[in-house]
Length: 100
Image (tube, rainbow, N blue to C red):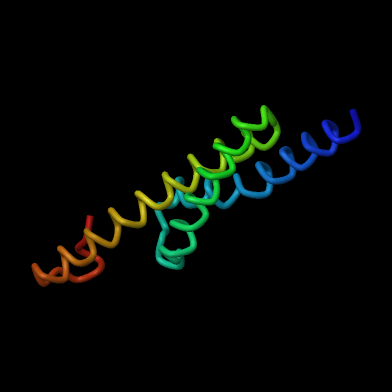
């Protein structure tokens, strides 16, 4: 019983600790300071924890890592898109204020 309570408490802390950054990034589309390796590793870490949560039947572990993994995937995709646009615009000679 106590391990379940601790697990759900950790779940809530992890999700609410991670969501503000994810929401900020999604709202502002500001991915300039995001390190690609960090979010790639966090995404894979979440994936492995999801697998472990399924194998163990550990719902707090599963829920936490599904949510954080999805947030990491969204932020990673935004970072890739923004970096691609920046490279494209640089090739076309656009100034930063002319970018989409």
